[in-house]
Amino acid sequence: AETVARLCDDRELVVASNREPYSHAREDGELTVDRPAGGLTAALDPVMQAAEGTWVAWGDGDADREVVGPDDAVAVPPEDPSYDLRRVWLTDEQVEGYYRGYSNRVLWPVCHLDIAKMTPREEFWREYRETNADFADAILDSTDGADGDPVVWFQDYHLSLAPRTVREARPDAFLAHFWHIPWPSWDVFRACPQYEALLDGLLANDLVGFHTEEYCRNFLDCADAGTDARVDRSSGSVSYRGHRTFVRSFPLGIDAARQADLAESDAADEWWAQFREARGIDPSETVAVGVERLDYTKGIPERLAALERFWEENPEWRGDLTYVQKGTESRSGIAAYDALQDRVADAVERINDRFGTDEWTPVVYTTDHLPEAGIAALYREADLGLVTPVRDGMNLVAKEFAAAQTRDPGVLVLSELAGATEQLGEESVLVHPYDTAGFADAIGEALSLSRAERRQRTADLQRAVHAEDVYDWLESTFETAAAIERGRRSVRTT
Ligand code: GDG
Image 1 (cartoon, rainbow, N blue to C red):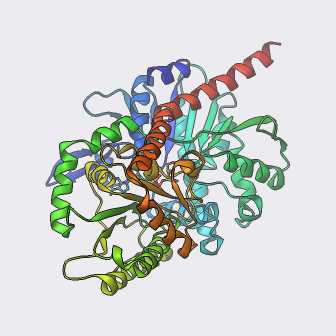
Image 2 (cartoon, rainbow, N blue to C red):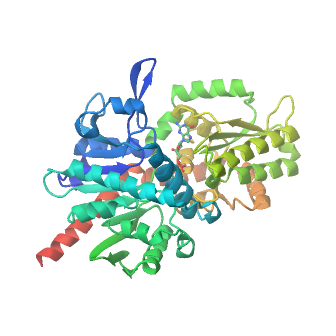
Image 3 (cartoon, protein in one colour):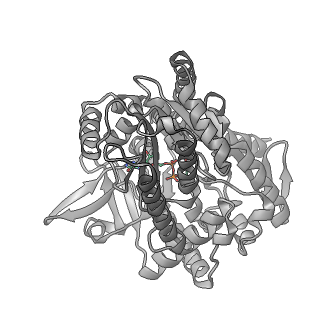
């Protein structure tokens, strides 16, 4: 955290993301604070504490409104206030149009190559623009009066337009943006009617980061075809409206050491003992696991079809291979998500009716949000980790599964369409999520690996996830930013 803060050179650091790192709630009249849950927020939090910066995010919920000081900001973390959390308040129309509409019904499907699910309504775009302007205002307000030009780091697809507004007001600020989902090729991206405005917003940044080289190449192609920018592929940069944007890949990692500790924790043991008991999983059973939000990009129905095929063709595994699917409901109320929830529930019921017995349930399904230790226990206990999205920017579950193999090592079965495959593909059993027959065979192959082979693959996977963890990701992002700044300064002085 100190290193990263130093790389900001004592300039004001502002992070902007849709979700807030701390949220407040009222339970039985008591005000409670929810801690950063995801790996990224947990890793960024100490950086923000060291840099004493500002985090701008959507303030979600009534309790958040109670905990504001001047300028809609509250100092966090609560026990040792060291940086400002500044909330952007959204109207119901904004939540519907900016978040549930444009972000999740236009950008999400387009970037995951599912343009048939794209719903580009006029009011979605209007609210997205307005909300991005609100974020930009909050960023500018919080950097007002700060010494020097700020460093602003935007997270993700919710905030494509805000960089342009910030750039216009603060031409010398350093603006970086990390895009957590895939960037599609030009022929897909152009299906989005606002492609030019989106590129215009993103090209106001000095640095745009993606998980993989492929997304970087796609972005450069889109900038080339969708704007009048000059694209230099050899340096990975775009010159547009008098400004140069560098495009780089920064594959996001996890806190691998923490994940391994969690897998070995008492809380994980306790959670697993209870879950196993409650769901009737016998200790002798072989366990496969899938952990995700119920999102159509995660390939859950496709995976269930492959498992069904596997049990069909391999009757000796009935009663032995149990699949645990954790699928938390997500983005409910959006038709594509509601349909997916029904589809998954129906498939689970059908498979369990077809193969289940009084003693054995083939698919153990839970929609609960589990404690971190529960997730780690599932990974640790599983003989197979099935991470088979039909598209995924990175997929951190694959990395968490690898890090949590602290005992009898399990096998990672990974989709060739996940970003994580660029780093973990070689040591995994790779599948194509839509090739049901090949996927079923791969499950058989993964189950047949010897202990020595599983141990070797796991050791290699763990080396990979520890070698490029979330802290390396932060450091390389900020080092790249510092190098770009140094390059600029030397150009100015020569
Ligand atoms: C986007 C991109 C990219 C899941 N269920 C529970 C729970 N989780 C945690 C997992 C993991 C995280 O949520 C999911 O991360 P993913 O990376 O798999 O997927 P997305 O949410 O789609 O994230 C993705 C990511 O951004 C980062 O850039 O990798 O490609 O789509 O950490 O463990 N955690 C707890 N309970 C649950 O029930 N505690």
